Image 1 (cartoon, rainbow, N blue to C red):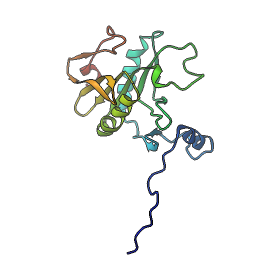
Image 2: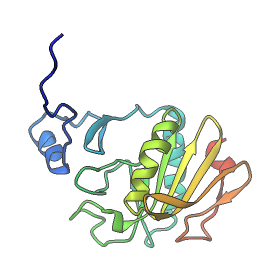
Image 3: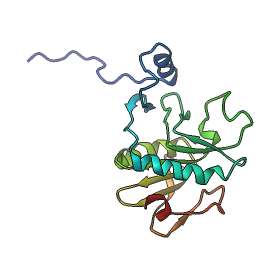
Image 4: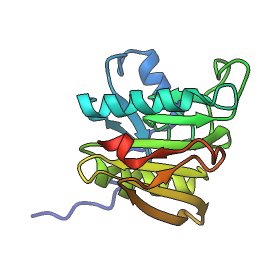
Length: 189
């Protein structure tokens, strides 16, 4: 077998600009559930009944924060030139135009929630470090099968300094809204 000449084999990393151009030209259609993670276009899992129910419950819970926060549901945020994730729920700093004039960036984010009914390993191993590197101040990963919530706060050097696993009747609230409490059981049961 002949040796392969020295070349640059590997994956092509897309930028956010490439990603939007693909949507504008029809390569990615409106029905495609995808996000840009580490320069790769990742197909997202379909939203199941339990997943959708948890998103609805938390959206209703967080809407009580209006006008102190914008509840951004299954919409993209801009982390950097190669990362444009689409979290399940994002709490954003308030803006009068509700972000119609710009895609929210990490600087706008107060909290990200990922609902993981079938994607826990991906959300924990890939997206958690991405959010930490992107300075997202707080992350909740809801592990639906295990009925718990991984609470991550205080990003530093690409990791979260504080990580806890909460379950049952334990309470959690967004760091920026400490009085806005919900129990884990209410979310996952």
